[in-house]
Each structure stands twice: as structure tokens, then as C-alpha cells.
Length: 345
Image (tube, rainbow, N blue to C red; front, side):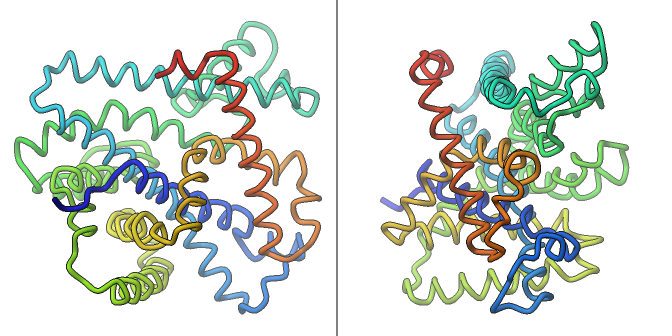
């Protein structure tokens, strides 16, 4: 029996995506690097920024994995009625919303004194409504104030829950031509910028589930050493192509789809096959959503001076990863202690 792409592979790929996310946010541009006096030796500034800029491919990885995971689950269940399909979607939506609200509550309970909620949300009933909207992760849908701009991704996460079942049904009907629809649809119909940016990646992820592409990559009959060589060269090539100005400004919404697949294979199967490193990536991946949602507070608001204190890029990166991961671990332990994790299964 051939190898299959499992949840463990997914967690390893998520772990890699989180590492790319932190690298991108910590060292996003030349101005930030100069302001925080980051030491990026032994790299040149141009080379360092090329790599850190590549880090924002992390969102495409998350979109791909979400679409792939939901579609794989639906395809494995065979012919489901629309009612059953969207009943599952509704449960997934509520589960994600509750988890997000718990994280929002944890941040507010710990650091309420640092945030001016009235200035942010406004006074009276409107302020309460805006706060509840933000706490539910819905601020981007209604264009209302948010405590953290990084939370824009919740719009994509929620949409995928309800969009992927339709895309799965569509690909079962017409097959891979759905990719052509995804290419041209944003030019024919006005859709939100973030949806336009990641629609093709989501459709690509559904196609990957339909065609079992990750499984096929796992079962390539290629010597491991050659797989590593191809993987490393592929990643380098992806960085150079994606960060090219013309590609990034014009075609990145298309390029990110195959790049995400390559990185998922690279992180989930190749790097993930290294015993200790694979376990570390999987552990980080299990906490990916919490880290994604909370890390901005640490390096932007709470402990910015301490995160960048040692100046060295590697140390700065490890500090932010460590504190964000610790926060997530503690939060999950608290959720387990109060019985919330059991309720959300």
C-alpha cells in the first residue's frame, strides 16, 4: 500500500508556514530592519529581504491546507446531501469562532489595560456591537474596528468553510477545468481583494484533494538524496521566481498555488522526515492558528523592545516563536482544564 498524506504531514507543513510567517513579519522591509537595528549577517540586505519577503507565502500554505483538508474529508464520505454537507460546515464554523473568541478573551483578560477599547470600538451600544463582532472574528466582513490587523485572515478562514464544499461538488461534476474558472472568475466578477488573492490557491487545494496530488508526491520512486536535492533547488527557484517584481505584482495569486504545494511537500515530507526536526515542526503546526493570531501582540505591542533587544535576526526569531508557542500551549491547557476542548470536538 502506498503512503498517504496524513494529519501529521499537515501539521509539519503548518509548522513550516508559521516559521515563514514569523520571519516575514519580524523583518518585513528595510525600514523595519533599520529601525530595530537587526543584524542579518552573513546575508546581504537584498538577499535577506528577498527571503523574508518570500515568507508571506505562508498564507497561501494555510489556504491550500484548509481547502485540501475540507475537500479530502468530503470526498472520503462519498455522496453527501447538501444538508449534511453544510451541517458539517456550520459545526466547523462554530468551532472556529469559539476558539477565536477564547483567544480574544484571553488577550483581553491579560492585557486589557493596554488597549483603549472605547477609542477603538466607540462608546455605547455601537461599541459593544463592534467589540462582539471583533471577538467573533467577523470584523473584516463588516469593515469594523479590530484589536489586531493580523486577524484579517479570519475572513478567509470562514469563507473557506462554506466555499470549499461547493468547489468540491463542482470539481466532481466538471473536473480540473474548474482551475480555468478560478483563473478568470476574479476578472469577470467583482469580489473582495483578499478573496481574489487566494481563490485560485483554494481551488488548487481542492483539486489536489481530488487528484490526491500530495499522496502521489509521497510515493515518487526517487532516491531520497535526489528528492532532497530537487526539493532544495525547487525552494530556491520558487523564492527567486516569486520575488521577481513582475511575478509578485501580477501573477503571485497564481504562482502561490504550486509553490504552496511544493513547500507543503518539502516541509511535510522531506524536512518532516528528519526525526527531531519533524517532531518540532509537527508540534509547532498543532499550535499554528493560535500563534498566527497572537504573535503580533508580542512583537508589535507588548514586548517589542525585548523581542528585538539582542538585534540578531536568529535570536529575535527564536524569542518570538518561543513566547508565542508558550502562550498557545498554556491556552490549550486551560481550555482542556475547563472542558472546552471536549465540547469543541
